[in-house]
Image (cartoon, rainbow, N blue to C red; front, side, top):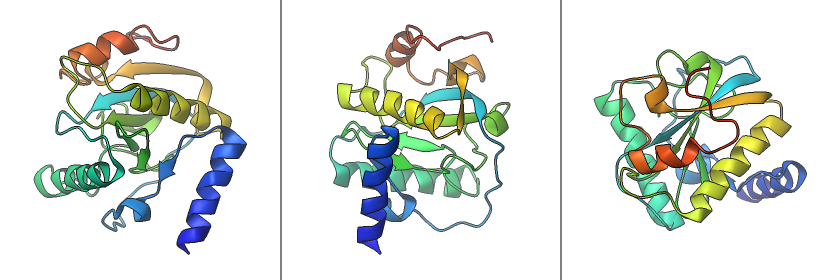
Length: 184
């Protein structure tokens, strides 16, 4: 079964130019049954940071993804991890709620956005080049697969909720990305 999952991940990457996406089962996510389907393609991509520990190896990122899921379920009382995807500074993407389930990452935007959170705190530094590349490839992948509209808009979490997320440094960087629009 694991070989099939790995083969499908490789085929997806080759077909759609997707980054390496570690499935929920691949990183050991808790099983949940509460998720609602989301109508796609969505018009928005919301960029976050976890504001917690950074990770730069698969083993550390798996542990961090589990820690984020546990925080969201146990402390926030959400039914699952809030983000659609997590990105590690190892360059891997870790599936959260995925492409077609409503997230819990930005209250007014959950039903119409993909929430991508880079693991770490980016108040005073930017994510690694590997993480930035993975975020941008993930967005392109979502567009090519029909989950994100071609004319999508990128927003920082702070543009839709009173927060410092995705960190000052990272936020200043994403404001320069072509699809960024704080007001639209």
